[in-house]
Length: 174
Image 1 (tube, helix red, strand yellow):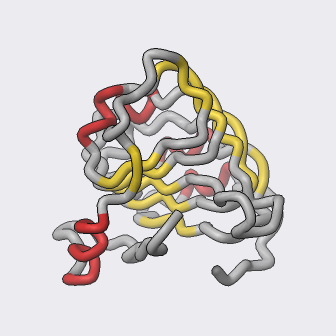
Image 2 (cartoon, one colour; image 1 turned 90 degrees about the vertical axis):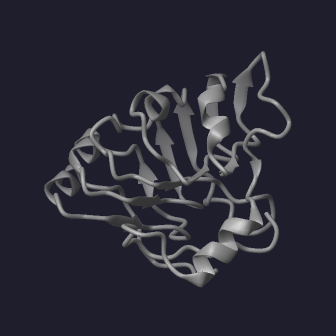
């Protein structure tokens, strides 16, 4: 991937971007800090792409982000990017479940999430959650085990109706 020269943290003023549909800061590698709580006001948000950075902390409240369909906040597998591009999101995934979102894609792999993995997330077709600190009982092996390549094909055929965010193509392997 092409690395940007973006550095620093996301400002709380991001909450003023009320019509923001897609936040695509993946592969920046040098963005740090926690996600501002003001992100919870981004009600038009459809896609949140923050993979391969150096964010940390709990996710903001997502209960008002009813249009959110894709959350991609994973960390890089070892050896693919510079050492800095490891997100360290933590806490539980309960805020995603509580928001009752209609997610089509969730990638939280390689972070520091803990608690019991919410089985409600097993209904997401394209979901990856390996490399976290989930407690027992462990999630079923087929639950959030990786990307289903059939959805990639759907993205190539055209965007999902009502989804205006950047089409996200996935590498053949993770």
